[in-house]
Image (tube, rainbow, N blue to C red; front, side, top):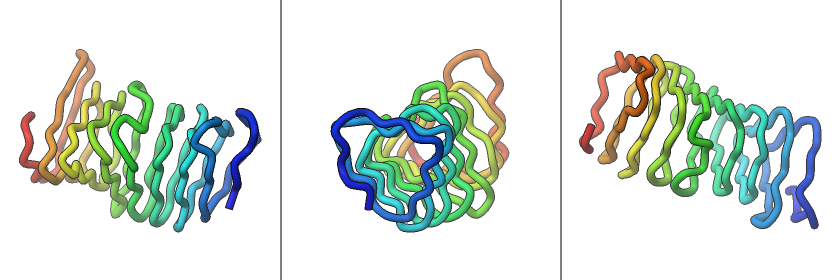
Length: 156
């Protein structure tokens, strides 16, 4: 477990499979490898987030790229990712929203569980499945290709 620190902190790489606790300061790294069992109760700075296994992000992330490689990554509330981020969800991986979430680009072949939240995005090419009672909003003039058998029941 990474315990609270007294100021914002920058390190090269975070490799984690436990709990990171610090709701008041930001931990910044070039790469965050959040592995099975990671519970992040802290804010993450810019960089690239890669998740594998059961991961929960309760703090905010400023990461420009966010990749769910395996397992389920759960966002612990609304608006955890930056509005312009590139989110990739690999096949057999799942991103579960914790409320409304706005991103820039969506890619991959995995799944998104809206859990009642609305996903808003600019564009992308996503062949996975979007499911749940939430909705989807497309903004900007960028192209968006959704080729999966989506089952979400909220508004489009």
